[in-house]
Length: 389
Image (cartoon, rainbow, N blue to C red; front, side, top):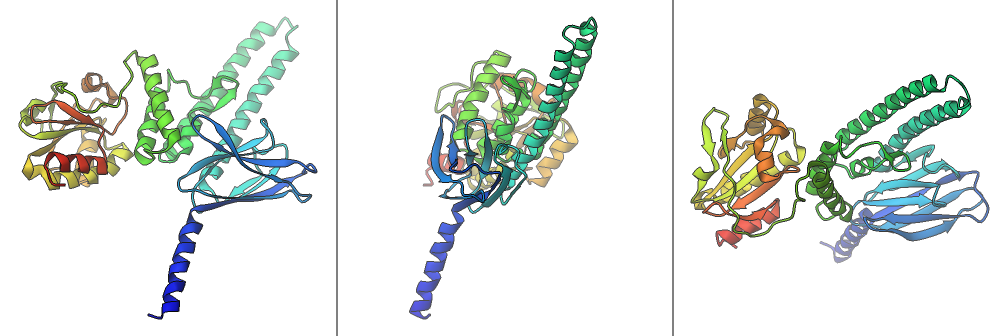
């Protein structure tokens, strides 16, 4: 190969690699104010950090460029009241067109799927807020009327309808974007100061669901780690259970589990004594669980003959869905049990399971030696136990 051509290829590859890690945020603000600055802030779990600023020219045009390695939340803002929250991923070129005093509800957003979907949600949320403001205006107009009690009853009913609508919309929005970081933002939306769309006491399942999915997809993201801690606290407050701690090696014996297999045979967890056992909680409806299953297959194939077993407990709602999940993911070689009671299964309380996937690694005597090992962490731990490193 020609040396110059080879160097050209290397340079091109380096350029492409760097380019893929950069993001560009540009656009136009209508009715710009002369000399005004537009700021780009990064939203982290514990702070809001200003990264850059530009003076808006007479045409209202602006442009920012950043190098990032993982998806990041940014605030494009003029002041504390006028801002647009964005989820930007490496390689994206985001274009925003908005009114100067209405960044949070842009006219258009392109080039960033996460930001587009958040803007879409904001428009729906704004409609709800405007409906609620309309009810407030009616109340203010009738405060001196003898009809006020009847009017208030009607307004309360309508307000509840509007709140239920945005609550349902938010849940569907989360379900549709469960693997994206935008689902995290949806958990904390408000229709008024301290009036949240989702209620942790009533909608705890969604906090757990988002935590479970994002912990699997973005385990090292600081916003996700912060979410996990908050969800653990919420679970403790709502259910009265102690917070889930990230355990390591211990001498605690795993509580007995006695449940039926798909064939109807009753199988006990204690029947696996003598092997290292991965006690895994999953469900066919759990996408993060399904994505982890190939890793379990790999672990089983590598270490079963050396004394490794998997005891998988399903939280499925129906036997058909459970069995189909086993067949589709080719998991039939190890032990499967379930009472088909979803989150009402007694084993959930027994093991204090707050989200799935969740697992416990047991030694040959049935003692818990590690928890929530997934991906390479599970492979590395098994390699250590069976001295194959």
